[in-house]
Image 1 (cartoon, rainbow, N blue to C red):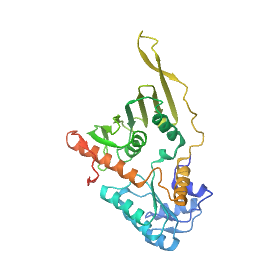
Image 2 (cartoon, one colour):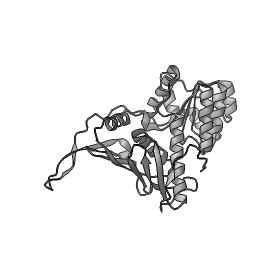
Image 3 (cartoon, rainbow, N blue to C red):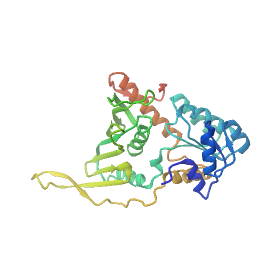
Image 4 (cartoon, one colour):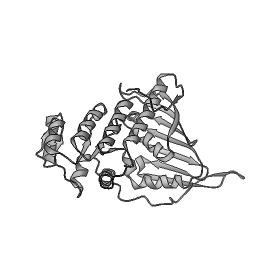
Length: 315
């Protein structure tokens, strides 16, 4: 599977990888050689001025996303593929969205699973009521609320819509100073309740979701590479009761699941058709707001924290 921006651009017949930019000159030379790129820059202003790219990917630390996005949007690029999370603060994210809108630039955030046809099929399954009324969604993750958590928060929003309030709790699992491990509960506007639970990445890697509904259950296992579906049938063990019973998945798992390639193609389509991407700057902003609300709650004895568009918290 192609998992980097550079390889996705280089393999895509609709794009050509023309330049690389990095402050680490050793890394820059290494990947310049790998991709046969001679246009190597340590200064993004120089890159934008000399190369005048149509599309740029921003794969730097989140506290630099806003500055580079504004420079790129004002330089005349048509599309920006920005890594997650969108920014470090809500105000920075809002400014990125505002400037890109003013300059007619497509701003797309790399919440990769939105570019995977499997998750689109799951969303259709939920939206059409195949699982019935969603009673609860449980997510297990590792490696920080910003690093991995942004993916699970975005995926839950993709499936269930916007969040009203959250409660968070700092996990006892060791975390970095800038990316805490948080357990939490999310209440969605449609009445669905979701919970997130962090495990220690040193024990095992896990990215799994369990969606339980009144008519069925779906388990997304091994980072989405395995899916289990359960319908509801009469219990084999308890007379008069019904239980979840494993059944055949009602759709096929797609064989071609190149997230990054699909993402770039989607962004190019959005540029050509002047449409909003499936993982927009606004989606990135809302995920950031939820993460910051979870941290705020965790810092205040798990007090219920309501989502506000005026939130100005920082990492």
